[in-house]
Amino acid sequence: MTTYLDLHCHSVASDDSRATVEQYLKFIQVLRKRGYTIDGIVLTEHRQFDFDADYSQLANEYGVLVLKGAELDTCFGHMLVYNITPGLGRDIDFGDVKMDGRELIKAARHHGGYVVPAHPGRYGIGLVEYMAQGEAFDDVSIVERVNAGSKPEENERAEDLCQRTGYLGTGGSDAHLASHIGRAVTEFNANIRNERELVEALMSGDFRPMYIQETAAAPVG
Image (tube, rainbow, N blue to C red):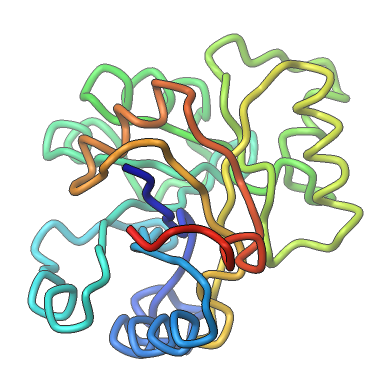
């Protein structure tokens, strides 16, 4: 089974977003009516994670999988964190904008999570910038290759990074507005129903990023 997920979006829980989760799910119905395929989203709120937030009722109502993650600031740029467990929540200060990105990657792995550097080609804060300064990231094997909120040349830098290093790439909208949801997604050759299965699918390496237009001919589900 194939699953199409937008792995990067922000609701009003993030201080710079104007979209509610329900608004995202409503707009996904619009995308589906246009013939596009999107099965779910991962909420990656800035510098926080709400263990108590439960979107299952909305998810069932709209037929959209809603998973939770986070986008954290580190000394090596922004990083997307998936399958955040209580143990990881105890070990990491999500509000620390200077946290060591390498330590975050290790802590997430230790607790069954996974970290993907966000928009690596973005000027000033992307992983490409730090690697150009001589930094090495031996624990990185996947980056966000397609970010629909980035400039085309920034996505080109991310593509070049993947070509040079052999990194695999994910796709996400980086949406802050309802109409931006799903502009880029990740196609997984797996049936993903929760955050743990998302990590398993990432670790399998059997996925690819794409823009929503590329899903038009894809079978639903």
